[in-house]
Length: 424
Image (cartoon, rainbow, N blue to C red):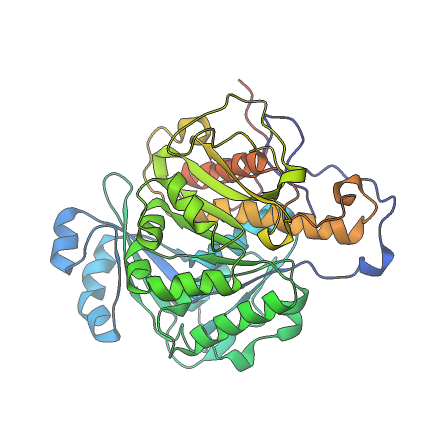
């Protein structure tokens, strides 16, 4: 497991330097450390989303809609003329892909894929574009077509989605590899998979979260889109309360979920339901919040800042904990502006949130790995268990750095490890 960044301020990328093996627990040397994700397996088709095209297709800018096979057939030829790029996609698929590059560890992806995988077809492109470190061996093969998600990129980088689900929801809970769930350093799914409780994949996703929680495995949930959150708001809140440690979303989704326009206030409300929150805010940066026990809080040496929450960043140097493990719990927050101001021209924000989430999950998984393999380390000397390896401030910096790489590359996924900062 690569660890998430040197302990000096300008580096927020995985280190490759070998660490000492003194005190390593030999019993856990062969344990797999695969991040586990359950997703609607989907191919992304990027389209230049001009206002005229969105109006022609009956789409609302910034929202996500479902298309059945009939609607897809009606528009396929028109969209093929506009298509910019076809690539493996899915929020969870993007995140586990990024995790493998950041951590140097494998990941396992669950879901349903079409049984006819032939060169040139979307399912073939999905498999061909997924790195070998992502284990696809547990996908369920189902007759039919892989899901297609059209991402309409607006002139300012805004995104609108139309999704033809195909067989993507045909993953039943009986297919869940429960031993993999219980051994995972973390599990991940999205509200997309839980949109309709009647879907087999929705039942599988809730079972996975329940099994993970019972096994003490951290559970992460992405929110999808603001429209989906509004549609399933009460159910989403119930899921967060019951199962979720880490909730990830953008600012619009946070507002739809909490009713708070301000990201810090939304973050504070979300912490009543979960242990750690990531809210991406586009060109305004990234807001995060979590819990620490009063005994283990650490004050920042940066300038103390006040917004809607006075002195919100005072304890951002704290390493995070699960709220249930805090005898005297304290909410802590951090906000960071885009790394280097963000790319000069933000052409596409697709995948930035998935990249930030991958970085945070890397930190959580590294903590569990280190606690298991090097239990005598000073990192784990306290009589409590921490959720993260690094402080809230460091995690925010790391997520920001990885998101920048995705934005800079105009791609929803990393295609290489994140290297050192450029000098100068």
